[in-house]
Length: 449
Ligand SMILES: [Fe+2]
Ligand SMILES: [Fe+2]
Image 1 (tube, rainbow, N blue to C red):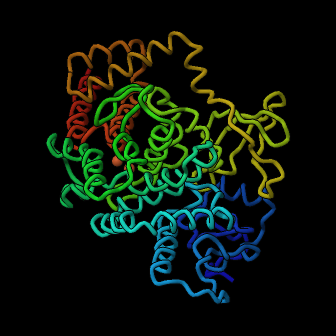
Image 2: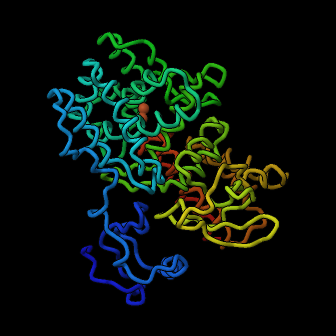
Image 3: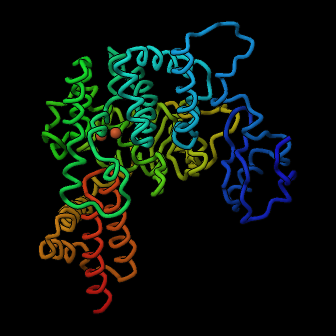
């Protein structure tokens, strides 16, 4: 049995921390490090679980990270093939977690498909040399690229992208231009100057140069060059708009952002998958919504307020989602108003996403819509350091609001959005820092009145 001391659910105390991942039928139930709270105890109770000994910890489960150990197989691989396979499983272990991938990689079929795609990509020695150089230079950039490869390839297949192999190599190499950027800058934790930020933003073009110098196929050149372009033209390096961006580039932009937001870096926390989806859905003028929806359906994770179709034909609204088990949300059945959690035995599942209710609320309410427009001007001016214009919009937004609400709905939201802009690469750390200083001025003005 596991290394847990606790056996009976009734012995669990609120505030205790679960020491290792707990699985039930290959499904992650509770992630290591999760603090026990009322909701978690209630969930265990709802699922009819009374003892932890009926479950097993990750170490005892034949899951994702282990299929490379096929001792009985008498196949002799070449050293090269063996090394690629080893790299695949090492990388898989590093990036995959159910909180970001849902349960898609719990089946052998997907893993084998991805493994073969990875092997066939890396048997091209130019590709493997490039990728191993990136891994050596900046492991985070490599693991992020591998993460984008896994999610991107699965999503491309689901979305009917024709040349999956080229697309997969494009995912692996999309950030290869970072080889050209100094380690000091790539791994810098503190404030980035404007010049340093500009240098980071050159990596797509450095990537294109790298491909030309190393005779890499032009079939994934656009993926390397344009993965930071956005539908509304606010991306880089060329500021291309919607009609100039291929389906492949749009799909990569969605997966790249999802990975960058949710993958842990040593010096900063990550967004939960739910937060990342809220952000992507909210920015439908930047990210192609159809691929955001496909990605949610792929990993089976939907944010609060999503309206979904269930496998029993009923429609439901997602009421709450636990960050550690986002694939078992609480739902409210539309029509009956019955609230329940998706069952552990998968007798009812979510079949597809219909819409995000927050978006339709916004569109329905004119007054709210106007405030949202003021809001986007306000944030843009703060980010650009135009205090005077920012304050004009700030006054329009906060007109008639109670101080309490200003703090929660404006100040906190502003801090979060500025942070998101930095994480997404729209602001440098330096610009983020300047924006926070401006926020401090606003706080002083608001609360000194
Ligand atoms: Fe990039
Ligand atoms: Fe990237």
